[in-house]
Length: 146
Ligand SMILES: [Zn+2]
Image 1 (cartoon, rainbow, N blue to C red):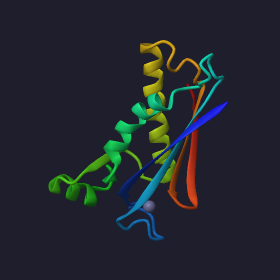
Image 2: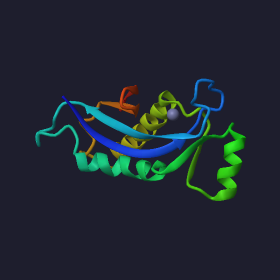
Image 3: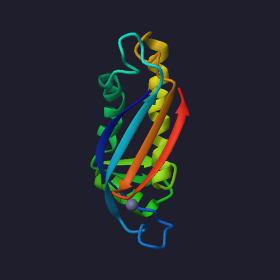
Image 4: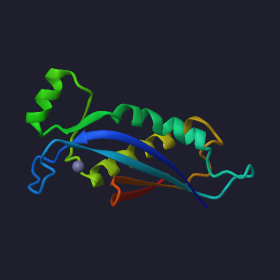
């Protein structure tokens, strides 16, 4: 069985080394689909959507209406630091693929930590899948065992 929940956020970014347009400062209305795979427990649930939201929401709050900046991008990085505008500095080019890896890692670590801390809530969750849709027609997928 697979369950899923969708999240959305707005974020600016750029790919400094791109030569076909993405080197310019721009943004996307990102869509995130988080899927959990496993056998439902006796209560009929693989996981509780509320617990999933509790894990993902802090991440969305951190990146929503921010500029995600590669630490290598000193030009924009310096502007963001001096202006104090909301930003998230990461050590990778902010492609959909890398953002997807960043998010799947964040959620997997949070779920694994909750699995150890509490019994029952995440016991049925075996596989995590994340899809990051950068535009209406493009996306990147990643998955990991929980
Ligand atoms: Zn873009």
